[in-house]
Image (cartoon, rainbow, N blue to C red; front, side, top):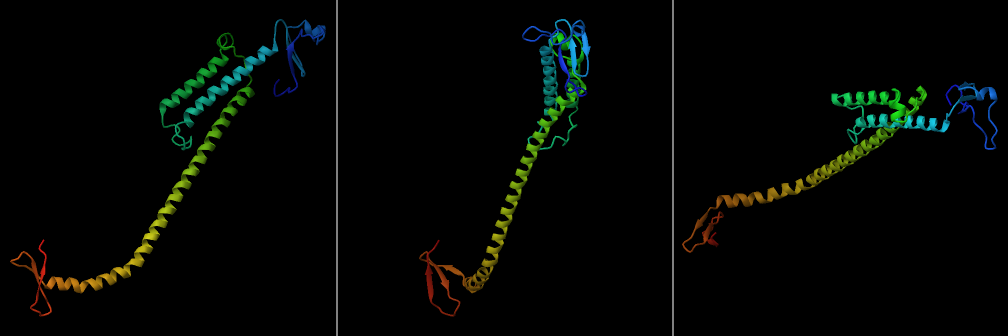
Length: 225
């Protein structure tokens, strides 16, 4: 079945029904190959099921190798885009080219593709079908990365908003405590002056004597340190 003949039937030219009758006319059964808009058949021991299975295996192989080759690029980071420094590693480029060459060789070189691997020749649109599915998987992965990046940006934004709120609260607290600090300084300033103008003298009994600055000769004893 191809793009030009979507209803074309693949079969053996000598195919029979379950009751033993032939599907096709004797003129077709005698041929080794026959093709029309509705039918494509081969003579001999041709079996369309095995051929279809081989083609499906070939398409699956192309899909897997292409997807894994692209995964080497997408798996470099859990969050960064695949296009970020995509060609920065020359060894990865060489490995990707080697993987592509081996895929083309295994699926197109006779004996290797059919006798060894059991593959079959596939048309260009079957190649495209397999590769598009590989690209779809890459698109899914990149979409998930985009969701992760959005989540991380949201976390950073929320953290920045929270820090800004804390800074505003500290500024507000500072604004409210400044009057109390000014009042405290104004009330404590005379005491500082008083203490600064009245030195402490040691006494014979081991206590300190503080001389009053208000003209009184009275001495007060302070415990020694």
